[in-house]
Image (cartoon, rainbow, N blue to C red; front, side, top):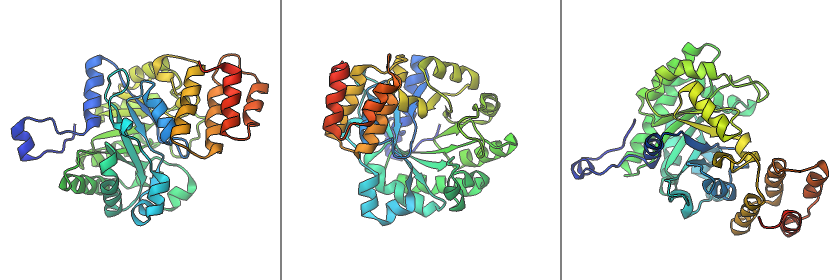
Length: 338
């Protein structure tokens, strides 16, 4: 595992590694995997992250942010990134919790500067090498970086240098996909690990594959012997039992959920259905940490779809709510406060 150390800390015997690495250690000691809420465009906003933190999630991610916008614009920083002290404190059941800011960038200095700017408020920064959208690849970011292992290594190395220089105990990680030829993925991983990356997340699909294609867990298992840092897998994790099965199939240290946790933020508690209490807790976080109402409505629609007894009529009535007050009244009237 990577570390950020100083001579004085070594003399004092203090464990000065990033919090995320300590979370991997704690999960291993408990004999379980690390549970992670993925970076989701628009939907990994603050109230959803706080809800996930209360639901056995060890690490939450911000949505992907463009490093060049974050560096150059205070307006972009204020609109793209909000946080809360709870995100970096132990969960209600006493487990450590970490917040990761994900950036898209193809420039080492740009990424390092964004990492330094956000460092006081997060436990780690992550480089997106897995976004398959055409606009991102045309900009040379996201999946385009999977063909640029040397460049990604320089990005990781420069960020770690700058963070270390500022005294920040912040992890630097990378999230990618797999190549059709796994030897290319192995080469990419070797370059990134040589640069000192703290951990790696791999989405088990090719750049060209959509979510309707099952993730290739066999390929992830074949990559496992070539990974020397903590390793997260991503792709089609919808339940706690499914997460545990994925860990066994791949040999990974943890799992990252996206669509599954969007539908059921409590999935890692072992609940296969959303409870009224969980739904109300989300709305309470929204009241405290507001986000645009259309996003709230999308979250609630996804969650209601995983509640027992939900009909098309109920979903339609949710969508017809005019504002947050109307929505809260509907939820309380229909399910109570849990």
